[in-house]
Amino acid sequence: MRDHYALRAFRAVAECGSFTRAAAVLDVTPSALSQTVQQLESQLGTRLLQRTTRRVGLTEAGQEMLQRIAPALNELDLALDAIRQHGDRPRGTLRITVPAVVAQSIIQPVLGEFMARWPDVQLDIRVENGLTDLVAEGLDAGIRLGERLLRDMVAVPVGGPMRSVVVGSPAYFKRHGHPKEPKDLQHHNCIRHRLDSSGAIYRWEFAHRSGPQKGRWYEVAVDGSLTVNDVPLAVRAAQDGIGLTCVLETSARAALDAGHLKRALEPWLPPFDGFYLYYPSRFQVPPKLRVFIDFIREWGARDMVARQRLAPSRRQR
Image 1 (cartoon, rainbow, N blue to C red):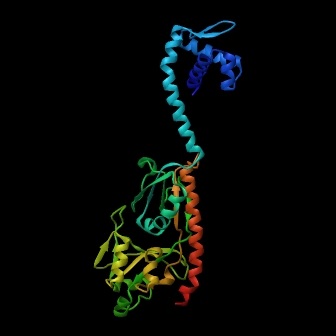
Image 2 (cartoon, helix red, strand yellow):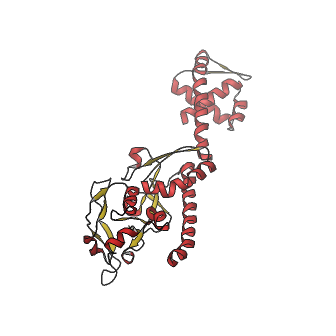
């Protein structure tokens, strides 16, 4: 940037024909401006300006220099002005990665509101369930469960604690009964979920209800006739009476509210740490990401209030 300033200083003197007038344009002292131009001439090994008591003119080298650098300096000034605008207002493309459940339950309901509020921000959303290296993939941020985040990421909670639910259709429970505790799942047809990140079958997670391990989580390997890697497909299969499935409550909420699914094993499924919006660094967070973070926080607060209002009516059912 120092060389850029020296070239701009030379251009200003050449165009103004005076160190005094050029210094006023650049908001520096004439002596400082003269020293800058002298240093530039020293670096180039040639004189660029002819100085007299009344006037400053260009040498032949100075004329060629001005012709060559003026267009480049104009382009550089325009580029720097455009970059500075990124620091003043949210604009540009925001690239984020989210799992399918977040795309459905968080991004989809607020997408129109965010884009209407910030029309100069373009969203590039990648829906993928596996973990993604933000820096390597050129992404600005992502949303994942807190337990899956790397420690060097800056994480902002989104929507508060989450819960998993074990659900089945009323017809399924009528035929096969309700499991009383997690070990009873061995007698049920369970719709299993294959993890995209590893290809492994997800082991259902429960928390001990009592005893010395109360509140501690443990895993149960389940078996069944259907394995999927898509949560909406698992939920639909459960509605169709194929078997029980274990998903995040938000994925089954609509079917639960409509009565298409019923819950099981509730006492073994307490809340746990929920989703976080994460990004690589706190240093100079770009405005486009800053407004997205604030917007998601706002959504999370509204969603928690809405869930609290609905909770009493759900308990009454």
